[in-house]
Amino acid sequence: MSLLSHFCRRIRLTGPISVGELMQDVIMDPKHGYYPQAARIGHKGDFITAPELTPVFGEIIGAWSLLYWQQAKLSTNVHFAELGPGRGTLMRDIIDTVGIIGPAFFGKAPKLSASLVEISEQFIAEQEKLLCGNVKNPITPQQIFDNPNYLTRTGLHKARFKWYSMLDHMPDDRPTLYVMNEFLDALPVNQFQKTEEKGWVEIMVDVEKDENKLFYTTYKTGRSIKVDQDTDLAELPVGTQIEHSPMSGKVVTALAERIAKSGGAALIIDYGEDQMSTELTFRAFKDHQQVNPLEDLGLCDLTADVNFRDLKKSIADVDGVKAHGPITQSSFLTLMGIGERFRQLYSRVPEEKQDSIIHAHNFLCSPEEMGDRFKVLCVTRESDPVPFCFEGAST
Image (cartoon, rainbow, N blue to C red):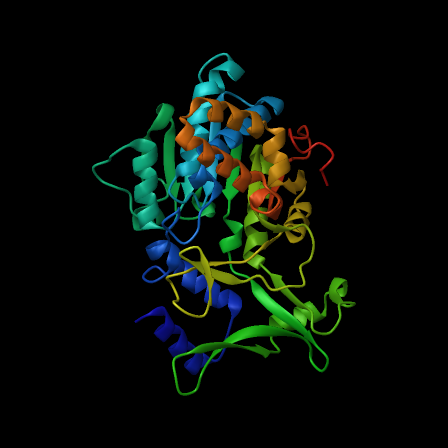
């Protein structure tokens, strides 16, 4: 049964579903979901991420990680964790950078390890190959779900790699540098609209009576009644539309609790704003083009802007931790010396490749591209020093 048929049957049996429910199933369904089965990243895919564009992005994250590890006076056992690691490109570049320049920071080679939280069999196979080389018996999502201690692989720079199907399965007993790059934007959002007669109503997904075609409608729901009770939203005018991602708040809260308990830091990189948005951002991409999110279900990437204001509220509810930023991706990369790194590369590559160096820099840092649209938020223990690049941006 296709996802469209599944939703049409479900809605006819039980009634309209929320945008968040649709998004959750389309992205996560084991048999037909986009990430478990169809996700395509890169120039030939549906979307491209910064690590797929240039290894310099991962180099910068790796260098920042070493700076923070040194700032916080942590041991030479450096542990990373990435949620939604895609093809493994970012983790490869981070580990490679830390493996190369780590000895200069610590006076000896650091002991490296990394945890990867992933549900896609396709991506786990690509990550294993990229980080550990060819393996005889590739790990499957079912194996790591059934047994969180299933297997550890040794790979790049003798780092130890371990896969988990969910964050809750990953131990929280050591300092860890958590990385999330374009992860939260894929988590479900619920949508609401303020009306004259009913107050806040929820935007829902329904099905046409005589054909298998989905459309948007509005209903008064338990979730919209909670929005009615939010005093921060009382003065917004009729017609205002907002989005809320409870799952994003839960993920960030879990990371903050882990950092409060065992130390380390989280680096969250995504597109969005540090304020309440009154525009709906839920959308779909296929072959780098924006398409209707209610069509081609499971074959398109579904996404929504990240509300960094809400993330900081979730972090503030956890004792012993502090949020820094967000700052723009352009500011973060520039402070970390990306301009000089690209200048070095430009001077070393053949002339026919120099345009690609310029394009990568512009794409990452230009305000019209990723530069201002993407933000970087950091979470650390409250007692730890303010991390490099975030001076004056702590809350």
